[in-house]
Image (cartoon, rainbow, N blue to C red; front, side, top):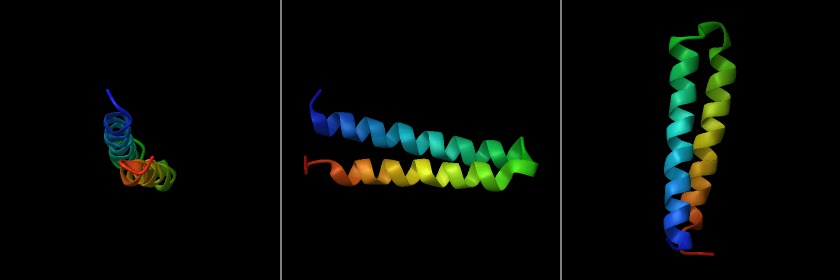
Length: 57
């Protein structure tokens, strides 16, 4: 695996974790949905940054 493949998998996994956190907050813990959503969006943003780094490093 080269570094572009690693960045691709990392961005995919981080995006999945972000979506899972958002759904977990909305469906299971509605009292803490805002916190879960903020953390989930942060995970998605980090995944997006990793995806943007593919081919540049």
